[in-house]
Structure formats: C-alpha cells, structure tokens
Amino acid sequence: MSETTSSKDRIKREAMRLFVKHGTDAVSMRDIADAVGMKAPSLYAHFRSRDELIAALFHASYSEYGCKLAEAASTAGTAHRQLEAMVRTICALHAEDELLFNFLLLTQHGFLAEVPADDHNPVEVICRWVAASMDSGDIPPGNPTLIAGAIMGVIIQNATFRLYGRLTTGLNEHADELFALCLRIVS
View (cartoon, rainbow, N blue to C red):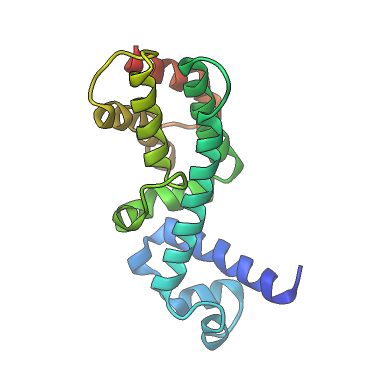
C-alpha cells in the first residue's frame, strides 16, 4: 500500500468518525486534518473540499453495499431464502464496519436523490426484489414500494436504535429476529 493510499484511507476513516460523532455540518477540513495529524493544505491534495470528501465516501460505500445486496438477492432458492440472505448481508455489513454503516445511515438523506436507480443502489435492489417476488407469486401482491420501505424500515430503524444506544448489541446479534420481522411483512 502506497503512502498516498494509506494517507487517503486514514483521512476517510477519521472523517467518517468525526462526521458520525459531530455531524457533517459541524466538521471542517481543519478538524479532519488535525485528527489525522496533517496540515490542512495537505488534506486538500486528497480532497478539494469537505463536501467532495463526504460525497466520495457516501457514493462509493453505498454502491458497494448495493452490489453486495444484489448478490444476496440473487441467492438460489425461494423468495424467503433470498430475503434471509439480504437481511443477513445487511446485518453482516453492520458488524463488519459499524462506523461506515452509521456514516451511511446519517448522511443518506443528502445523497439518495442523486443515486442512480441501478443494481448499485440498495433501495432499488430491494424494490426490484419485492416487485419480482410479487410478479412470480412468491409473495402476496401489494405496493412494491411500500413493502420495500417496510422491510428497510425494520433494518434501518434498528440500526438507528443501535447508533443511539437503544439496542446494546449490533444487528448481527438480532439477524434471526430481523429476518422474522421482514418475513412477516412479505407474508
């Protein structure tokens, strides 16, 4: 790993930590530079602005989550098995990097309108899965967008509870219960 890549990765991690702790509006490039032990002008060599840094962190990570979710949605077997794979994938992503998950959770509202409706968009992956499962008769008919929203709500609200201390353990420890709740939504 080159020095530049290492520095850029440190910047990203510290920026995420600060954004989650204080909110994106409360963190300056100088705050990030101080946290990584560099001078602000050096930080600008990696990212032209705080907004560029936030957008880069969000879009790359959100897209990666979408790809992993699409892979889970294509699991062989029944719609229920696919739903379980998606729920467990989301829970595993939370366990793997809770800081990144929290960053995406807290910044999503500023970027979701910009995210293309493709296979790299987690919301679109779930909406398409619901619609396809309804079309195939694997789950009862209904409004696919509302059903997808309800599934996401089960996961996202519990991630929010974890972030603010209402849940004391991560999503992975609740994967069975979360899947059961999502299963009720599509039954």
